[in-house]
Image (cartoon, rainbow, N blue to C red; front, top):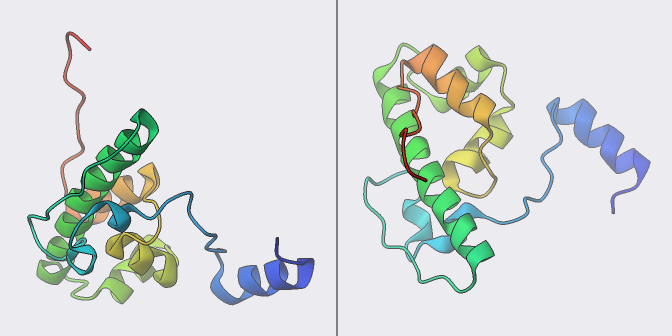
Length: 128
């Protein structure tokens, strides 16, 4: 656990302390360097139900990370750094999310919708 000085410096330095995630989404792909960069990835087999849930989360995040990366290059922002600044997102945190080294939040998806015009996912109605 970091001491209070480390926490204070982390918050002061970045404006947003990036902690270690519960898991790294890119760890579920066989091609971790392609996370968020290529449209299709090969995914590894999972074990238990909890791991399967994290693997599904990783696939959803990869799809959004790829869509965000592609949309940024076609947007007026042109760079991830400019996009991070426009959304008020810590650049270090955003790059970790796009590489699958940190877990994406719903706010990140909302920012992509508001600033890049990405569609929001809609849950299917009907049987679970």
